[in-house]
Every structure is written in structure tokens, then in C-alpha cells.
Image (cartoon, rainbow, N blue to C red; front, side, top):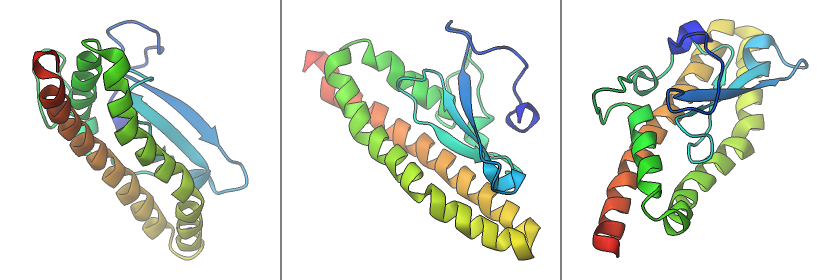
Length: 166
């Protein structure tokens, strides 16, 4: 998974240099490519949405590979999430509600559709394993792309809503 995400072998610790984390979900009743899911977050575990990356995922979305902490880039999911996270420190108690209104329904949908995604992938896997892996890859990539757009839109909305201490 580290090779797929192009990340190093550092442990996840609470300090500013950490830009990601993950929770592994291992389900032994499914084939490994479907049964293993890394739920990955970028930047801050409390404000970032988690995205599922199935063990069978072949390639992740460009926005999850595109991060240079010294150069801001709107095409980087890490920058989009970090931007929102940093804005929250201006007016945390109000802004976190706005983040949750966007993030929570996204995550709830991920969790509610997981079983149907698993079943579709399993059906494909039983007859055409490569198509199942392509399906899982497309699913994870689409969710990553959605997070980039969602958090770029969110930081634009927060700037407007809370500018000049509104």
C-alpha cells in the first residue's frame, strides 16, 4: 500500500509533518483484494474524510499522489483538506459544523454502500478478476476525486461565509 500511495515508512504520530493516516479493515470471508480496505485520511484525522482504498486497487487518484508541503496546489487533496483544517482554527466551533455537514453525509454514503460495492466486486471477481480490480480501482479513485472537489468547494465557502468575522 505504501508503494501505491508513494509514501514512506514512517509511523503515524501527532505532529505537523504527518500528512496521512489509515485504518485497515480486514475481512477474511472475502477474497483479499476485496476483503482488505485501507480507510485513508489526509492531514487531520478529525477533519478529513476517510476514503476507502481496497487492497485490489491498482492506482489511486492523482490528487492523492500530488503533495508538496512547500507549494500550494489546488489539485492536491492533501492541500485541499489542510486548507480547510487551517481555516477551522479561526472559528472552530462554528466552522466544524459546516465541515461536518459536508463530510459526514459523504462518509455515511461510503459506509452504507460498502456491502453493495463488495457484492458487485465479488460477482466480478468470481468470473473476471481483472474487471473486479478495475471496478474497485475506479470506485476508490472516484471517491478521492470527489473529496478533492468537495474540500476545494468547502474552503471557498468557508472563506466567504466567515470573512471579516461574519
